[in-house]
Length: 116
Length: 111
Image (cartoon, rainbow over all chains, first blue to last red; front, top):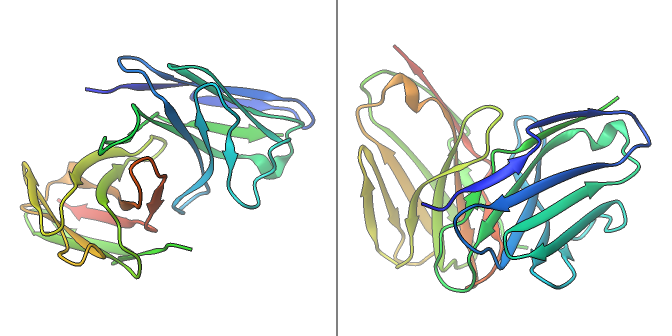
């Protein structure tokens, strides 16, 4: 079955630094990847949709200059949290799909970001 | 925007009991998905529903896509302790659209 690998699983960084999170589709080509944010005891909130080779589409209220998304290949998308602040601490999850049509969405295992 | 109303918010049941949870929406979805999330992990797909009225099983899990495309339910039969977790419904509106998630149902199973 489809496997999505997300790395790192946990990261602690200092305020003001940047953190990069990687999302890889291991056994399929992901034309579209999604990035979610999840606060404790809450549901997943979509941050942005990225299509390979084009700019990401951000949801309303998500700062594109703060959450940089790059989808340079069909198997890799990265989310960079720039100038991180403690309020950026959260659980970030990516998901991937091969493309159009009724395909199941496979999720990565998530990244717990703590900004101190 | 599109929203999914998922209920119940939480359930505390005895091992062996059956469980039922559901999601409703004012919008039509083309696809309904049910996921389970364990603490500190990403959601894992349980069942995907693609046709209105479709009834699909996966082991002890059964889910149905409502005929109006605005609702879905998930049943778990003969619950076991490893069923503990948070269950999310998710709806997809278009062929390449993003998923809209319900708020989740937290399931606790007492041995």
